Amino acid sequence: MNGNIANNFGSFDVVFSSGNGSTLKDVNGKEYIDFVSGIGVNCLGHNHPALVKTLQDQVSKQIHISNYYNSDIGLEYSKKLLAITKMDKVYFGNSGAEANEAAIKLARKYGFLNGGEKRKTIVALEKSFHGRTLATLCATGQEKFHPECFAPYPAGFKYIKANDYEAIKTAFDDTTCAFMLECVQGEGGVNLIDSEWAKTACDLARKAGAIVIADEVQTGFARTGTLFASEGLGIEPEIITCAKGIAGGVPMGACLYRGKADVFVSGDHQSTFGGNPLAVSAANTVLSELSKPEFLARVITAGEKIRKTISGWNLPCVKNVRGKGLMIGIDIEQTSGEIQKKCLENGLCVSTAGANTMRFLPPLVITDKEIEKGLEIFKSCLM
Image (cartoon, rainbow, N blue to C red; front, side):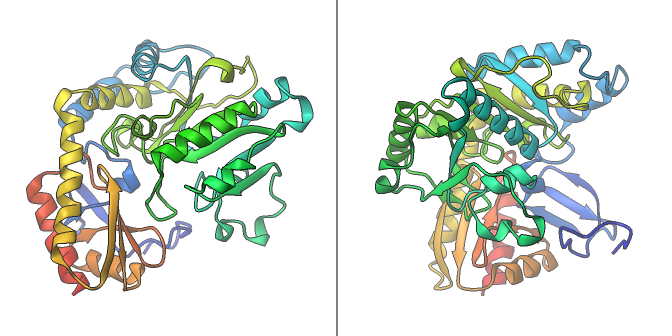
């Protein structure tokens, strides 16, 4: 491996040079089925013709102009995005953590304007994950992400157990500014959130004077079979954060908000690269592709195919298969990291979500043939 790159990620000893659809190729010419898609980023797969053309065309026009000005493609995309999401405003950043930072600041300012200094607490969920900055680490309800070496952490966060009705009876009060949830917990284990519980929790949060933040960084842009997973839960958040699949591989994040959450004014929150023309042009093409009538239906059927196939194996080592759309978790007896390594050696890229949980996030355009080939490799690695 290249010792010049900080190996914070514990990267595997493989170097990819190209890809097409849901197949990657390394520098030695070996092919791999991609069940990771850049951790849910490459929603249109690799080398998608429409996305490639968009980026080539945009590079010849302009890449970056700074947020002192607006770009034509930025205005076009924001209008389209807000119309389809029924949100009022959008802030563009570069990552999910940045989108969540914006949401946290929005929530804190909303709380200050609607309750004063005491209304600062954000209620999040245990097993959640919201980012790697200090504030988003603190919003993350997993103690392993709060090592002492990074302390002190920002205050004002507390956690409750998902799908626990007793917990939400006392979770929200006049110190709460926001309730923050992932509609499917990704990093925490691909844990599903119960729809009725989510609706009840959001109602109680609002009754206490708080707003609702849906972290859709991993679940957004058709990953679960609806444009946003909050649609599937039947909740209508005041704030939605997104990144990963939003621009098909170009770094981008966004924080959408509406109604009483619309409290940002000039100077409150900014980003040098946020909303640059290259990123929003890619995002515009992604949204156009995802908006095709057959696209969402295909995501649902592809996800069902994967889950039913694995369940149909009846392997004792597979303890549970769950998910929505193409966001899938598989609990196994083996150590997930070892199976991940074994899969890679045999030509399949997968990710993990805990010590004994495999996570599949394939490109949303994955074909049946690619699914079948990938699952054959996965099965052989389990046995």
